Length: 52
Image (cartoon, rainbow, N blue to C red; front, side, top):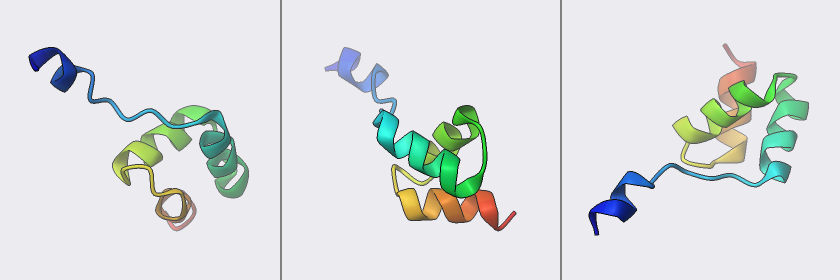
């Protein structure tokens, strides 16, 4: 339905977010953004934040 499409914002667990924060030494907002850009791929999210 149309409503479901609007709610298609990826939701990541606190553990995923905290792991990215710790590994990439960044804040939660950057970790969430990076996870969103990588569609939840933790390894890629960390790489994006540490190789920039």
